[in-house]
Length: 301
Image (cartoon, rainbow, N blue to C red):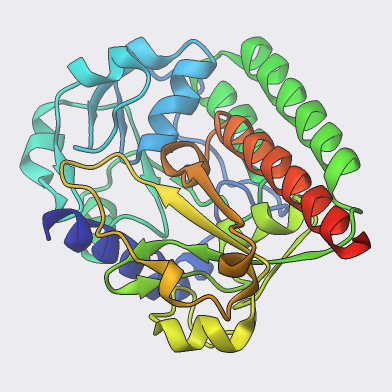
């Protein structure tokens, strides 16, 4: 139950604060960037796991003096003091760290905490990746903030090249319909406004719930039956308690069930806005490609 509460709270933060995120220029905006509070930060508070990962990627991880509970990669991140989590940020702890830079996850951190930090005139920069390409933009931004531009550019270019290779290999394949099982109880998926949908599309697959009214809709199995997906993708989440297992075999009218087309992906890779996401993306694309080939072979019989 605790893990479900964490996931739902996370999704609500991302979904419900999007309007606030739009009201301020994000770090990845194509518009002219505002003046940065520093170009050589030494004491950084990083308020999201993907921010921590990106700072370590460019060689600035050792400068992080505070982060959130769920920042667990790389291993060195586990020793960073914790100043908050899904429940919010402990402002007093942040102040005690005397940071010269706070990188906020604009659509993930609580709006009330962001406003409090603003009111205290803290040195804030916003991370707000909305597309896969924004990972490279943020690597470059973090490089400018830490005087690690050279390392950041190397990492950003490598990311862009790898992403382009994956797109060229998989994006134009024959579409295959997929249901992405984000969570099992309650049953949840994603629509076209989400990061995960972009990943599915990159693999040349079609998200059967793309047109849902909400970003993370709750469903019944009957809803999935009506959509007739050819593949069911389950997200393996690192959690203290595993998700309840759905006995999909009761629903053999669904093509994915009838033909036993189930794929598992690494949620810790897929659900973070970091360079490691490409490992999870390529893994999912390869699995979808194999499934597409298997379905095509059956169709020819």
